[in-house]
Length: 108
Image 1 (cartoon, one colour):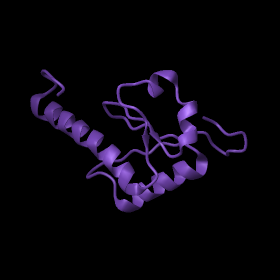
Image 2 (tube, one colour):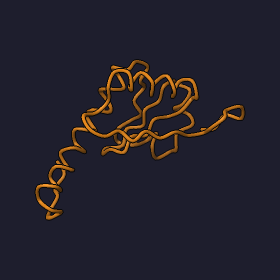
Image 3 (cartoon, one colour):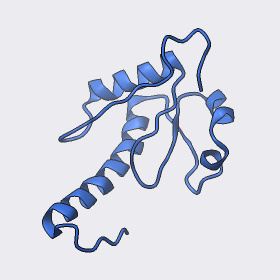
Image 4 (spheres, helix red, strand yellow):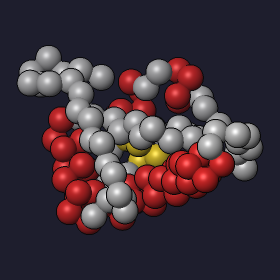
């Protein structure tokens, strides 16, 4: 979704290590609200994060109708709950690959 008066239409965060601090979550949420951005975290299952109900109408049809519906997050704690579930699964997968050398992966 791009606003005509917006100086940019997207943003990316590359988070490493132990996850998100409270300050980082607050910043991400404030930025998404100010720029009317949807948050798409690289995680399975993909759960689009919307920061206002009005964004729901602008999601791609397959995202809006996915098994896991968009999550409306308006507080840093709500954002943490969505992102940390995905991060934990991603970390489990990463650790498996490191330990097993890309042998065989079976998602839960």
